Image 1 (spheres, helix red, strand yellow):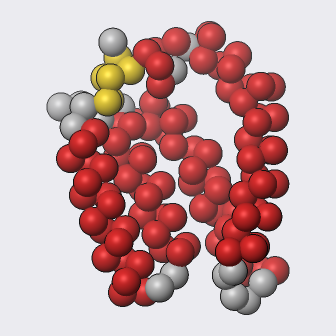
Image 2 (cartoon, one colour):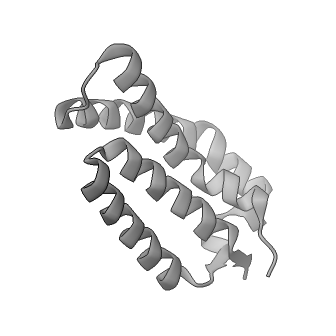
Length: 119
């Protein structure tokens, strides 16, 4: 099986950007991570992501249809999702830090997108 790096990076980039935004916010602006800060950051990031999609990503998907997630088949998605969920729950109970869980989830999305194949 061939790992598709280009499709994986394009597909999982928004989730990595959200995780990186939360990490930077937690360590530079606020010392503690609260759910209010998470929701505020998520709302701001969602607005930026919508603008990014409509201005850049939609045109990129029209020019390069093989990288569009709608034109791909996700192989082994059940296995990868289950393993990712088990690792996330274990990490949350061990560390009690949502940033670690979000980082693991974004890495799982990266792995799942890399194992997808074009239709």
